[in-house]
Image 1 (cartoon, rainbow, N blue to C red):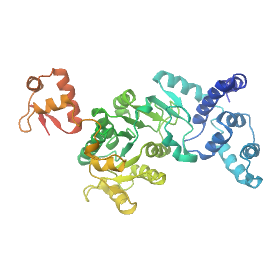
Image 2: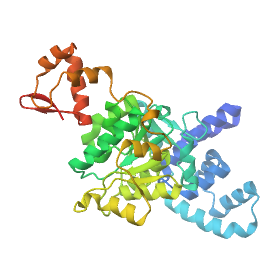
Image 3: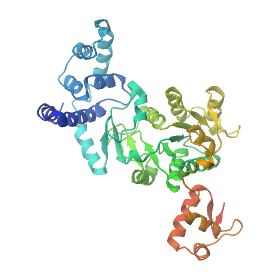
Image 4: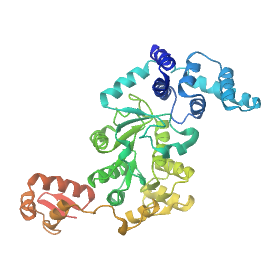
Length: 398
């Protein structure tokens, strides 16, 4: 282990409670760079011994038996459990061996500083308590860009196919914007297709949204959503449990899905193929006991086959509107709206438009009494929400 960790250990010895907190945070950063997401063995060591002491043992070359004895001494468990513990820890040490001597932690910290990310650990004011429901598979810490505490309770995870159809995108926007109007947060994975439309609809409706990434928060993925992810970081939060600089892998995507389901009060799958990764998120939600819903689609559409599978085989609840999803998340219907579905500007712009004849921005501005910039920005939001569309001759109501 590098001299940085040795420095942290010395700091812990001489600086009392504050130093201990700093050392624990630093050690959890190291662990986040050593282990893959969802490592239950690492979680057991850290939660029982403390991240700093567990890291001291591993970096000092302690054997699996020595670490197991430390665990038993701390928990007071019977000596009969030591064989199983030694086997688990030995396997864990083999997994972590190639990373414990790396200098990746320092580069991750520098990358985090450059992008304005910070590392949250359990006990921090901004730490989402719902994540702890993952138990032994809970993250050791979370890298965050933005403000995670803007996400309200309840929040809903909206996930689905990357190869979404116009139908799925329309339903996603309707549900996400309706939930945002009710003050319900939107959680998703920033992927192409359904995820991206859920985030955009939440932003356009001035709602709170959080994106969970499979790679570092300093590396927007997919690259085509870089601008969207920057907007989410500015108005909500972008979150990952892997350090800055880490690349997304298939395993990390699957593990990222457990965070999406844990962070949300309920999960809705809008469109999903028979083997869609969204079904993995749905499985995590079901395991956690979170409400799970699916949107039905055309029976001939392969992009809805996974949703129909959830409805038929996994007791998912059928939902078709924002009202139904809000009820699933524990919020009532229209009487419980926390903010208007339409802003004053949106109302004026729509009043100035026609559903039969396209009108130019100049014409809409004159009819609404608004300036051109406000009209142009509002039309962009209405386009995302599916209430207006641009034609070669101007803008028309959808």
